[in-house]
Image 1 (cartoon, rainbow, N blue to C red):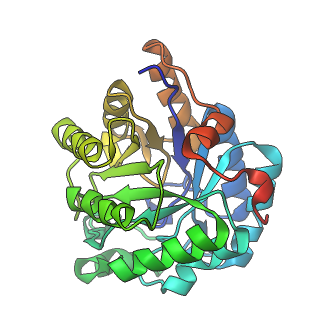
Image 2: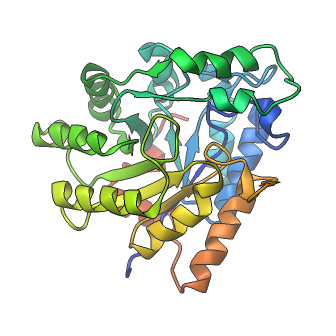
Length: 309
């Protein structure tokens, strides 16, 4: 509990669709503004996807990333963490395009294939803004988010060795921790590790305190008691599970990628609102908020001066 807490904020993601919330940032201007505000509210790490500014559909286009990444870097000291998960249906080259252009300090890396069930959301939306949304959500009934051992090796090679980027290892179930241990044992990645426990996604481990504790204890058994971990929890579970994580001595991630609400039944109006709420909770418990440079030091990041944007 002596260490400060690293807050990550996932700004827009690729699973929520525009019809779910009018506050989901879609354009480069919106993503830049939301990122800057989240950093000002206390986020040390910004986890970023891009969207087609005309339709809000997730896009891997590096030209779209070029429209907001430099603006975020100029306005904040936050660590930029680019997704390599992209969105369902993207090829590996598409998923890595933005990161290979930007050479960021950090990217995400999913540690195994999972089912991602988005289809229940389609039943709750009466009017879709865009034609692509319903098929996108319904198509998840028969979709596997593919992250094979070969895929993971490719990302470690192309971004880790190729660019000196470090990783947010996203683990959606306990088996993903053993997958990560496999790569560490093979010396394909050197600690310190930054593990993101991903709870509450339909297709992965559930979002409850027992599962979080099981993930934490498993990670400590595999990687040592001082492993750096964080947690994201989907939907209404976001704040309760984030609070559990920080009280266990970990870090936490919030943001509109993971939850569109600020409390049960009430939409969040911004990413910064969620960051500010977590900061308030931390302050009540007397916990310190990590600065971006503290996060860089603990995770051994290369520094923003060595990125290409």
